[in-house]
Length: 171
Image (cartoon, rainbow, N blue to C red; front, side):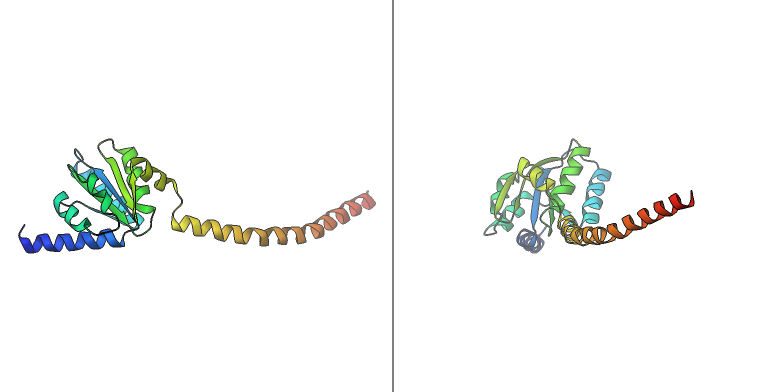
């Protein structure tokens, strides 16, 4: 890799570190190519990305970035998982780590906050943006359906009473 290529990689990594909602750093030593492709596919499907980069170049790219504290995690064979959504990359990485013992989450960053492995696990447990939107919509819609049910209930009760009276008269 010549100097120009290294500069491009540092620039790309710098953009990743600035624009990502969450970054997860993990060791991937011992993963097969198929397992790594599976991780990439899962991450891409969820809206995130995976990047393997030289630690030295990643540390250069981290200089002056809000998440510069993750430089300590960049030792050995590391992979970066990242996403704009502050939860997606952590969820996918945590799920992949459960399925594969060779994938070890070291830590990560969420904005300026540096996370250890437990912190990444806690972020993964949080609902994603889409899940939060669904919960808000459900909570907004629930009172309306309750009101409609309450308004409709007396009418159905009256109809039930009338049908019972009709049955008594017929008998």
